[in-house]
Amino acid sequence: MESKSIDQATKQLIDALKQTCGAFGLGNDGNEYKIIVQVFLYKYFNDKFGYEAKKTPGYGERLKKAEKWDEEYDKFTDDEIEDLFTFLPSNTPKMRPEHTIAHLYNAQGQGDFSNLFDSTMVSIAYLNADIFSMATVNKTKLTIFEPITIFIPDSSQRDEFAISLMRYIANPETNFEQMFSEKYDFFSTMFEYLIKDYNKDGGGKYAEYYTPRSIAQIMARLLVGNDKDSLRGVTCCDPSAGSGTLLMALAHEIGEDRCTIYSQDISQKSSKMLRLNLILNNLVSSIQNIIQGNTLLHPGHKEADGSLKKFDYIVSNPPFKLDFPDERDAIAADTIRFWAGVPNKPKEIDPDKPKMEIYLCFIQHVLYSLKGKGKGAIVVPTGFITGKTGIKKKIIEKLVDDHIIYGVVQMPSRIFATTGTNVSVLFFDKSGQQDKVVLIDASRMGHDEKDGNNLRTFLDQKEINTIVDTFSKRTSINGFSVVVSHQDVRDNGYSLNAGQYFDVNIEYVDITQNEFAQRMIEYKRQFQSMIKDDKAYKEQLIFQLDKIIFNEYPVSE
Image 1 (tube, rainbow, N blue to C red):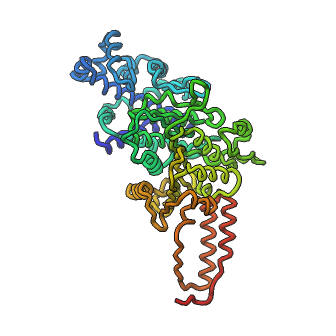
Image 2: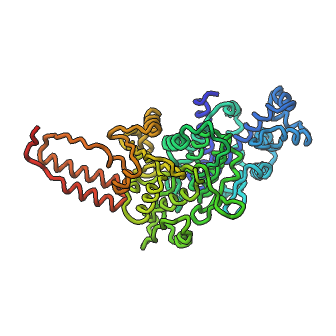
């Protein structure tokens, strides 16, 4: 099956499941994504089990010779089933004959089908609890499947609902077995097509963001660099993991068999998405390291002695602003981890306009959680890189004075579908052995495309390679990149903005005073839009623009 036909089959199945949910009054309901993801994953488990079972010694030949492997599997004895399980790879879901789609589909006429459907899901979850369950910070296990027909309020419709779902996943034309031999990013297709629709409203109090794959790829490639072949048994963490885009890119760059994934996110929905991502990206062994909970207040990954675990690599795209007045003092009490401070509580809480810059806490958490020679990368608002006061100033000074920061890449505006804030990526090396800082301004890169009702900027592969090559080779290109020492950064007021180090080339153009006035109005409008999240920086920039005056006399050559 080619990638294109996998894409088509994936999207067609999602559309069919969405149609069923809509027909039973669950269209765009808060539980719709749970239903679609769980049913889709059940289909994946079924096809994955069949694919691996047909490769096992002895039993595999018996299943492959059968016209329908699942019907042959129904004939296995209990001892044969248990013996077959011992030959399966550790990351393969186990399914008993009564768990298969074919077996369940054939039981539709027996009555009380919705109860059978739900109990089958729960039974599969418990059979696979050891490898597919994740935990909360309180050590509560969250299994892979849960009853879903209960989301239909009218119990008389539940059987019909379950039968309708089964009709689509039992369709023989939708078979994903062939994809398991390919290096196919199955999750990204599913996420881009389905899950991001449920993140448009920000997910309530705790906003969930999908990191563009271009940023994830840049972060992974620049962190790993030329070390790839020498890496073995490394630990990778994301303390604000979301659905795991950054971790997947990092794991693929290092090699799935060379690293172990650790993650935490306050959102149960995001944590479940991450679990799905690990399953679909051959990283099942790391599911036990998914923690659902508040990283800043209750970090979940600890050593045997109770101390916080340190990691070789950390990536993060944290929420930028989020009001947490109730937890603020408890977090600030950890003065070792949050040595630069914690944002003050806002005087008034507006759910639609949070004010507390929570990303400043995540920067400190990332720095604290890196091993002595660990490396990290974090997405921040671009306004941070010129921070002159408070917590920002303290963090930047430490990054520069201790030679921890070794690179900054300013990204194009509108590269995120969910925020108009301009973003940059900071690159850390805890060892402090980096002697230079690479500053890249990629803000003018990319091309715009319509994404729903929004205009979004995308980087193509050539542009991604340009950023990576320029950074890796430490190349200075005026107007795009500059390589400076940490002392240079100190001498320039601790600014990490590449533009402040570029040579200034002045080009004189004859314009009228009216044209000049119109241009200044437009420049101010653009700047105010671009840096709306950094009030002090915006005021200073507008102040400097106001000092520019029109020269009515021509400049002599």
